[in-house]
Image (cartoon, rainbow over the protein chains, first blue to last red):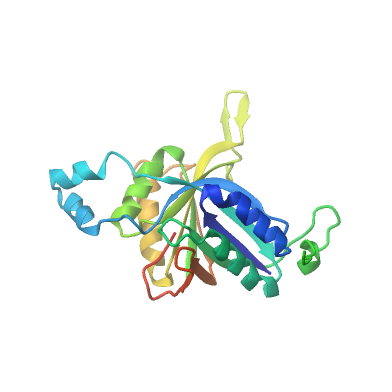
Length: 130
Length: 115
């Protein structure tokens, strides 16, 4: 079992949901999160601010700037991890920084609360929709 | 690669994010969470508060940076000189694969990427 954790743009949510459903992955959990990426970071400016130059500190502003994003959590059997990642990347790719990241993490076990089933059977059946 | 998840006080978020930025880890994600710790919440007079507001910070870094990231967060998130109950917890877990959506590239541990 794999947990796929994707951080994507807010306005791509509907398209992503549709694409994942078409790929047979219907169950997802989504959250609103705030974040920042590696882009738009001027290390020279940071070094200057750390060294105590007034100009650099003023340019950095008062606090960290965070951008609103959607975080998706999907747990799938091992063999579907690759196709899920591929689907998410295909739908969300605009080519510019800020498209997001996809992480794949191992999951030890999952349990369906309703019946107490464990392992892969606890995950929703993945059906291919034409 | 590893994912570092830290649950910290909401008022410490700005400090922790700034500390991470200066330490060279700009990429983080945060979310609001509610929870309690092993002190079973906070008892004020007759009332027990067991859903305390906290903030959860995620960052994915290479394995070699684990020590530095954990220490940076710990130093910034601690209150007082010795720390206090409610300062939070840090969890570290494995991440098998990392993809950047904009380039579609699979990232490897040798490059400085995180999110």
